[in-house]
Image (cartoon, rainbow, N blue to C red; front, side):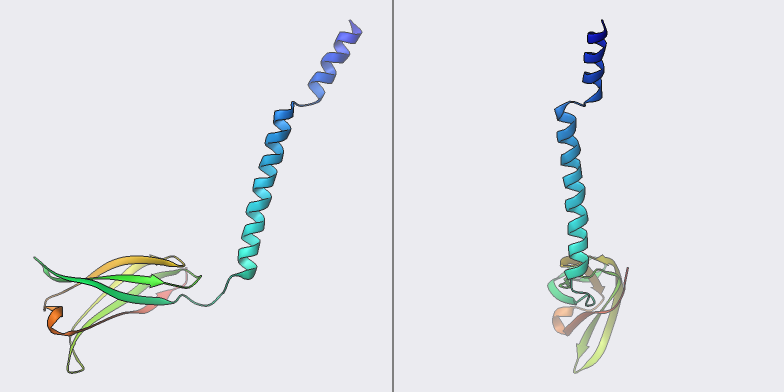
Length: 136
């Protein structure tokens, strides 16, 4: 009887091999995640967001003329609360101005938006750009 109790105690004392495999796998995943985060933090460029606006299309809608655009953030930093301003110009003078705020532009991403004008943008010079942002 004493030998049976010793065998039972030995079996209970050492966990099964699959528990070791899961524990080691979890440890490796956590170490890789921490390592990647530290590597990105040390090596990534800390320059400010680089925002560029490209006009995609102009179409007539019930409420006016929609100018659709892409906002491209080509930097490794995120921008939030991006103010976008669009102007219709004739002979260098602004004849109509519209503004909007885009909530978020992640690093190395493209976001889409639109500005609605009362005049037909196809008859004017269209100038759209990001005029400000906030660091999140």
